[in-house]
Length: 254
Image (cartoon, rainbow, N blue to C red; front, side, top):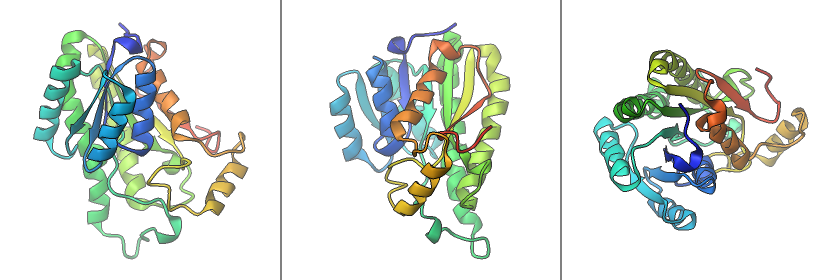
């Protein structure tokens, strides 16, 4: 079974700004109902919804809180319809500045756990909340946002990268379990994006270096990565699950 994007309700976490906002806008552009989730970025989320139109709405919830996610999915269902696609983009507070990264000799487990809580626990909470309606429909699309850094740790963001690697493992085991229900689970992994709030601290020289080392000779934009997310939710990906698609202009070959 597959559903055209304009017949879907899509929930995007961390969608008030940056990459999440670009993903939400991409789905809205294809006619989907779009639930814009936010934790702290309420003003940005509400402004985005105004731009996206009447088929979009903002929903505040912390993905680390299972009860809050259950309530949010219920609220989305009441307002826009049961989510057919969930995109887990929410990120723990983080700044991509390699010069200021925490190195191993001072890295605390609490820093790693912060990313695990948002990335992996958040995904688990979302999947659990979405399964009942997806099972009933016999259709569901779950897309997780990863990183190319565990293939190419040019800057060792230990905490962030470890959590994303764990998230990929969850994507694959979830794909194996949920496939018989008609639910696919995939990951889209970008590199450094030009430009989001998280990458705004990145020195311009780093962007130039990355661009020079990609076959396309440029840094990927949030909008370009969002296109790949659309693919996994679309009928064209109906036979694809458990996969990790790298969208970084060819910097990493997978």
